[in-house]
Image 1 (cartoon, rainbow, N blue to C red):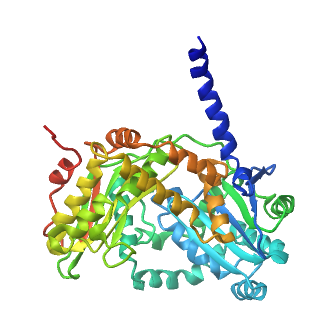
Image 2: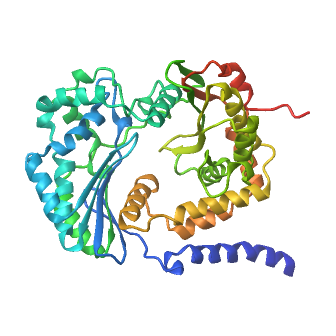
Length: 465
């Protein structure tokens, strides 16, 4: 009877201890304070000892909010952001930021957008006012004047190959949904996007319920709330959320073979994964760390003697290694996700490089060891806490967490969630989502050694006996 009572009591005690350890104060960290304004704008702050405060506006809107008629609207809005507003023309905006000694960073992504400023503590109110002006009153009236320059810049700018491959992988995987729209171009029909299109896009996407005002630095939360109420209190809330279908993941390939662009081939493979709030999300983070990343000639430990099984195999294949670099990625979205890898290799080593990485991902379902999981957990923890420690990094992380989870996630809580993952959990999640499941494949360059899609699909599983 006593043994039965002890078994019932142990889980309750463990939960209590875990909750106590997850408190930020237990780790000598400031908690994230959150307040929701009357119109739905969320205000989040985290105090830090610094003479500089970082404040940002994070919006749950991006390329995914476009439709066929407004494809490219996010890119146009990004280019118009620095052309001034009705209240602040471009020269005034630039001189005002420079006179404060501040820095401005804009980011328009696939699902989220952000406007972030580094300001001295005494200039916090002015920084919030500038950000609100840029978010609420973007320079849409400048479109007709700037459009030709924007389109010429788009045509002349050489995009990073990594971004192009990532763009095409999403196009291949989510081709029937806006999640698969391009983020770096070219954009079909962007010439026809008008001021009215942009105005409708901003009105429907930049609503109060989708905005988060976040800050990190030496300021009081009550002060930030008052500034946010003054600057964003007039923003209208959006209409009731309309249910939408989850993007369908399409197993297919999108290959751009070009034998004249050089000796290197660029390839990316992705599986359908889980959204931000999935119970299996942390396990996918650990799986990403298990596969890891590699770049020839870089790092403290040479890949040929690395303890990472995949890195070791890639670095020693063919005697000289079969890849210049590779990276395992895990991309979370609100209702889906994508897990996979990106690899750059010589044209004669395409089959070997892809084969080793597919085999490494396949082994997650069958042959992962506790040693590999513990190593990956240590590396994942290090990547989460060994950041710059700046207010910019803390503010950006807080804003993203508010959009993704609706709250700030203390590092202590994330550590406990990572500690709960073991080899059996990795096998369960990998077998459920990766083993014998559809993949999306894209490639660019000399791909004469690229396996056929049928063979790539077969590599997602194995016959062991």
